[in-house]
Image (cartoon, rainbow, N blue to C red; front, top):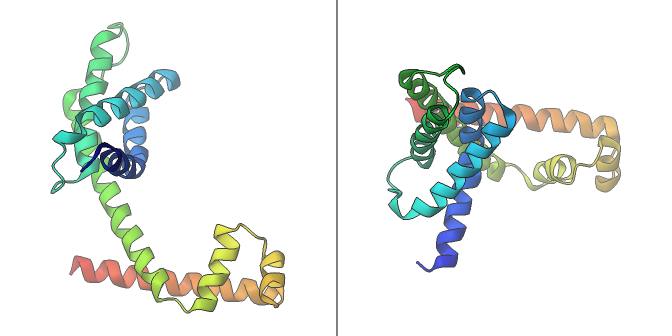
Amino acid sequence: MDENQKREEFTHYWLQAEPSVSAYVFASISGFHDAEDVVQRIAQELARRFDEYDSSRSFVAWTLWIAKSRVIDFYRTQDRARIIFSDELLSQLADTIARQADGRSHRREALDACLDELPAKSRRLLDLRYVDELSAEETARAVGSTSGSVRVLLSRVRTVLTSCIERRLAMENS
């Protein structure tokens, strides 16, 4: 794999993991700017160490393992008067966030599969409303319908998607 491919792969993984890493760091460090700096340092370290990542494991779990170390380092370099979380608490927080991220990724995969199953007309309505961010009135004009009809159809499509996602997740868990 060449450097551009590695960089693209890392960027893909990082974009998925960053919300979990940020949640962990911002929950662990009270100062906004301090937390922001730590997240940046984590991203830089992950990019540097990306060759060490074992793709058979969760990328989020790996990033949170590194994040935990950086948060501990942050507190070791700070004034001792600050509140310091125990290593155990930081580990529990990282584990909880990793589990939630895994759940979100399963939910996202289910959503993608369910979207693929939708009829073209329903998918177009969703795209116009949520991707193109058109209002119900603008969406109605685009499809030659009324805004009331578009609202009803969108409500039905969301209900179908919700049921589909729940069914897929239930099948995964059984």
